[in-house]
Image (tube, rainbow, N blue to C red; front, side, top):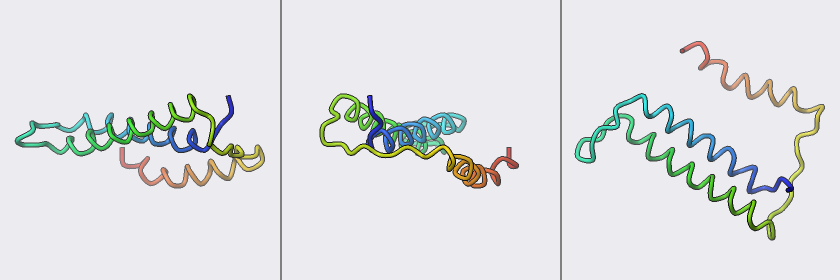
Length: 95
């Protein structure tokens, strides 16, 4: 199996949606008549996860028409991870 552009989009979509659902479950979902603060993250996270899984299935089952992408070269992984860590560092102190 080759790594295609749809994989590169589907994986973060599904992961972000799953995280949103997981974090949204800590808040009260409420009811349909009175939605709680956790309803929006759970509903949007579920939608995002479904789209991500659909993209992954499309890329896996039908590889025709997708464009192969290059993976990050080994020497460029460290700066990439440093940038990602710098983005999440401010939120690490809050918990």
